Length: 187
Ligand SMILES: [Zn+2]
Image 1 (cartoon, protein in one colour):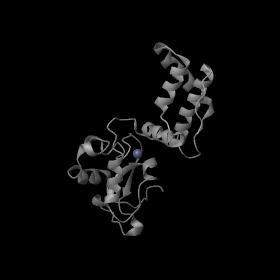
Image 2 (cartoon, helix red, strand yellow):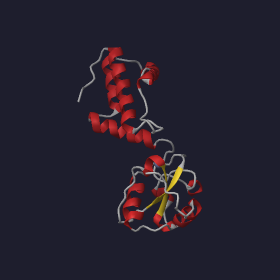
Image 3 (cartoon, rainbow, N blue to C red):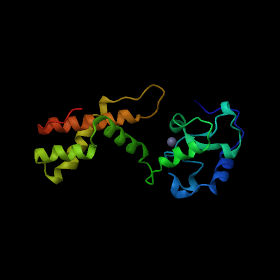
Image 4 (cartoon, rainbow, N blue to C red):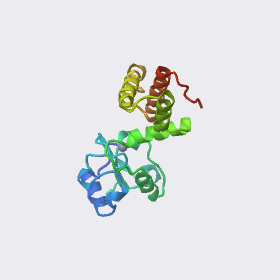
C-alpha cells in the first residue's frame, strides 16, 4: 500500500490544516514535528500522505482528508468511509514518550499471547531464584544479547514486527529461567 504518486496535497498543507484542529496532548507528536514524525507512532521515519476517506470510496485529495503516517502505520490504518474512525485510531494510540510506541505494542502482544507481563515474569524468576538486585540488570542484558543471532526481519519489512519483539522477550525469559533453573509458566 505505497503512497500514490498523484497526490497533490503537500505535507505542509496537511500539517497546517490539522494544526488548529487537534489538541497536541491527544496524540503522539508536537506540531513542530508534524512533517517529520508519524502522527500515530510518533517515530521519525520516512512519511507518507494518507487518505482519511480512501480515494476508492470517494475521498478527496485535500488537506482535510489527509494525515501523515510512516509506512508501517500506513499499512495498518483504517480504510473506511467514516472520517472520524481515522482520528479515533490515531488518538487511541497516543504515546507521550517518544520512541516507545512499538516497544509498548510488543509488550501488549506479549501480554496477549502469554497472559502475563514481561515485568511480572522477570520478577517471578528472580524471586524464585533469589537473585540479588544488583545482579538483575546484568542478567537481563545478557539474556537479551543471547537472542540477537536468533531473530530476523521479514523480507521487505525493515523492522522487527511486534510479534518478533514479543518473541525476543519470551526467548530472553526462557534464557533467564534456564540460567536460574526456574520453570517458566507455559501457555
Ligand atoms: Zn508510524
